[in-house]
Length: 380
Ligand SMILES: *Cc1c(COP(=O)(O)O)cnc(C)c1O
Image (cartoon, rainbow, N blue to C red; front, side, top):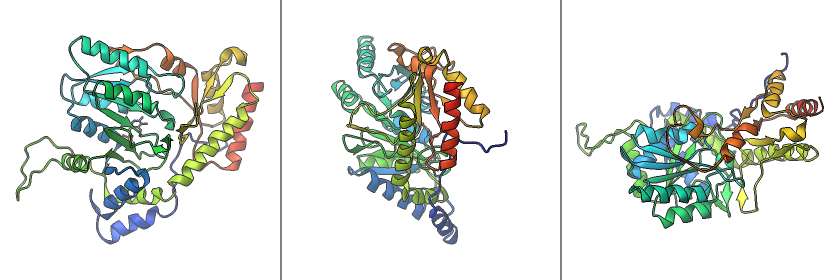
């Protein structure tokens, strides 16, 4: 293979990141606190609006873990989670010794089905145990059915943890994703819409919850001259160096959302003339996706029997990275013994769906290579 690799999604620096990182070195703030951490939190608060408070943390997974702690999840509790997601949405339930209950997706947004959610809650209640929290995910940047999911959560008075790790820059009815949960979570891992090389954030509407999150994320030290602890703490704060990268990335966030959406449009335009492949898009104008990754569904019947795996291998041979959609949690060996509510929608998406290269740093030449490869796959 002589041509360079085209990645699914790779870091895309804006240019000012190193200025903030250099400042951290120049002032010797090389620690998990400092002006970049505070500045990055303010940038996120301004961006998300809606009077939120943000605690910058070491990863999105850490933010979900702390979020569940703050919602009072304990050993033996039950926590409802969207099945069609990345494992990091569900792992923290197990960290706490709680039991995950997985829910199928619906076809409009591919996220948690409100009807299966309600069925699961009613079943739990009938068995004498109300779930402690609901984890909803805006997968691939597509907002879940916010009104419907919130209505169910509200009806049964169960708090909502909004996993917005893939949806910074997305919005629903004009309100930014990351502001809909009782607690919301962002990720700045290397492949996300913006990156701090690794990092995450916990978002809340309650300043006191932010303070509690920071307290727990810095080893839960009581006020005392010596080290005194009355609670179990964590080492989950974001480094001031990484936060510097985040400040630079915030300056280009909206531009990069625009570029990801252009990539999505590129695929929509390409596939309109093709039977047998559909591009995942917003169901109505209420939804605005950052299109972190563009996903397609392959219908083998309309493609002469060609499958998702055929396309993935074809692209791999062209040195173009693509990836099957997330394998649902209820089908994962590590989670398959836990309860599941719903049908086969998530499973069908996994069987037939593929994510295509979606980076905001894609060159015109790379786009041509992708289009050319897809053309040959379809006609070959
Ligand atoms: C990336 C991701 C996470 C975890 O974030 P990290 O920062 O990688 O720990 C959680 N949920 C979803 C849906 C993600 O895509």
